[in-house]
Length: 362
Image (cartoon, rainbow, N blue to C red; front, side, top):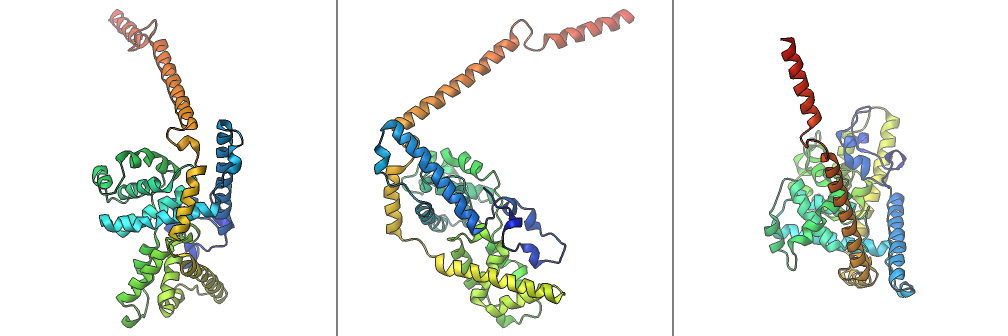
């Protein structure tokens, strides 16, 4: 379930531009498909979790009746904790490979979006994280060979990444473009084109400190709720409130009432983002995440556990369907070639008859 932005309480980037002019961001797939209200995010995660638990319980009961009663299935908060743990692994890997900021931010966005369509009980975040990062290197035009990638990550094979690549891309709706807050912060709109701002108010240290807050925001749901420029503005206000206020003042409409409404809206939005960054931007407790991972081993979808009865049954069913598809295709080909020229006897005959008619006329 994607958000209907007309129903959310968040202001879009249109509040930063001239009235009546639609920002380019609002034409993006991110704006249309990947923005939610906090309530919508909670609903999506609860719905996915409930559906996964019901499906897994049914499969387990079919294999061993009554056995699911003793399992402690993961709750939405447990899943989010585990996903957050692997979100924090992406900056570490990007540092190891010396990937640019764009790759890191994009991979994190991909991982978060994947788990708005799937659950960790179906797909463990470790390999999904590795696949999301590898995919991000390609979509941001920073490619690396699969051999160089996997050979530098312990206990990782090429199939661990490539087997999930299409699933990840499909879960993203093949919408690979991501608009990032760090670019909004770096861009002229926030730091380099402010009118009448003295140099002492925009030193390099302000940008670097604000960038740290932007990076921290990636450990939260901020980018799924707010626009990149809102997150960048909130990060800037944590470092230099006076500079952020000057930027807001430069964007105020001429109408006093509209200006006041914009000021109040931005204050509420930036306050919410600042709270999110300062209160929820820390890496998760590793021991708590490990405990969730231990529970996951017992309640994982049995169809995804190699060697289990459900896995073997699912694989046999997939092979049966593939065989039926091949047989139907072969039958259609045979049927099309029986009693005629496979290269189109009717067309050839029509052409020859037409040639004879021309010759007769001559």
